[in-house]
Image (tube, rainbow, N blue to C red; front, side, top):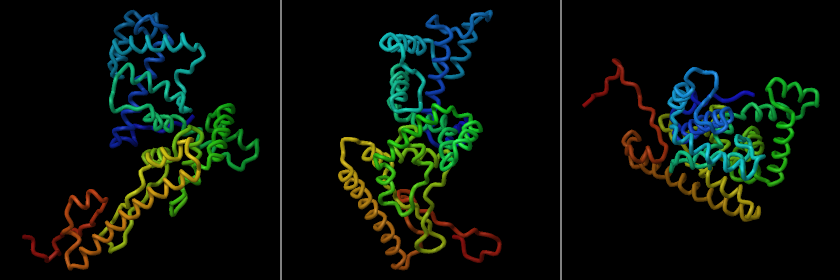
Length: 312
């Protein structure tokens, strides 16, 4: 199954990059656990010096023997309580909770949350989401070909499609797009439904992974001024949309309130710039703090040898 190469896309996204690195460490420890079944850090039994080899692996993935010992203790307890538990299922919210709890227990990190694994799930299961997207409106024979090309199993595909049906029945797509000028891409909702992720986080991840485009700058004044409009927090939207304790009407009201707040703020920003221009002042003289806080970029003219302005 196709995976997204996280290292190429998340150089400047600390939260998602850290989540991926934490999961990589977890995955290696789980592999070691399954191979050695609690006999300490020992990858294989036929090496002359397995402990030294394992120590190199531990160093590469940045974990200690103490962390591995805690990992084994935690996993032993989980398997004792439930021998059928799946310790490495990123495809559902419950599975990510299991993994996230283990990561938090063995390597306490106050900045890590189980929900940070949502981006890891998207990276790992992008081939599945793309297969579901490409299989839309195709015949059974064509669907099988898509799944073969994407190396996606039929049970995983069918289970994911069922989850997407439940997602659509919950009106999460309509709620998410309620106040948008342009509807969000289908792949956002396929990803959100198949992996049990909020549509806001799904969209932000797909933008971060450069699979879809983000919201472009607006240009309301002149060619020099670019404004990145303030957006409703995707995390806030997800919190509302995914809260099954709320009715659809309550969700709509809360979403509308959030959009109204942002709309007022965007109007204030544009009005402030227009007022500045109307007073005869140059846009280049807007304070850096104001521009940074409000996502404003000014395209400054290039100064060349033919530029006869004084530089003082």
